[in-house]
Length: 336
Ligand SMILES: [Cu+2]
Image (spheres, protein in one colour):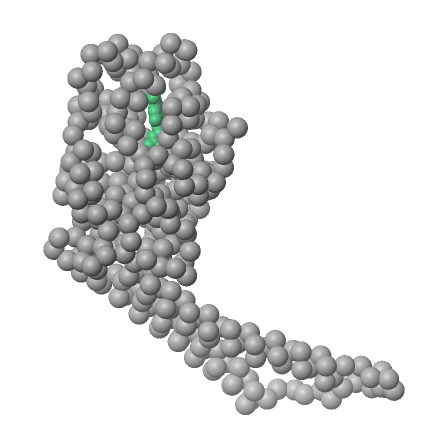
């Protein structure tokens, strides 16, 4: 009935027209991911040499010392006890290799962590929740969810800086083409940054097991031109559209339900902070952190019983009656 999240995410015919990017760590499109790929190549090269040497020695030994006709099977091979040189060699060489690998990783991590934000960069506070992402733009006073809009950085000058934290358990931010994993830890702020080189939708996901719906905690980074970004931002900053008198009955129904205890709709009495901000719900491409494409049918299915598309998620089935459901859906659909 419901398509699995990944196929939803990988299909290109989602609302909004942005080009879709693949999640491939070997095709980085931002500086942190590019630095990490270089480090990964070095690590792969070193480990490939180790693999070839070890596997080569094993093959050589198997062939060279195989059983031959006429071998005396009762005769033990020569027994060698201890060798200081060999033991020193196989202790020291791996230690050196490990230190090289640590050094390479530490240098790349430090370079990414210590980069300081250029003045005009966009700052985002990303808060992990079981199982969705709260996205805050403190400089703009905006709160949204599950989709991060950022300016594209084709000139390399439009970085977006992310402060990462969590409202519950440890999550991890990972958008493979933009930046490697950085944990979101309660009561702590971690940093990372991204500077997407090409416009488009970059898909990421939570990379630290965080409970039953961890696999459906997907994230989209939408990189767009500065003009598109600014237009998006000013539309998002507006409070919800409440001027439609045809919807006042629907809005009253919504306001009378306990949805308002968990969800914020700016400009209305819905001021809950437990679930995603719904002020501009219809501007988002997916529902439930990537579990469903955002369209009428899926929205209805979600509100009717979110436990079917996303079992175990922290929004209960509200057991709305048919008429209530109709009103709620027509109200939610006005939240453009
Ligand atoms: Cu998570």
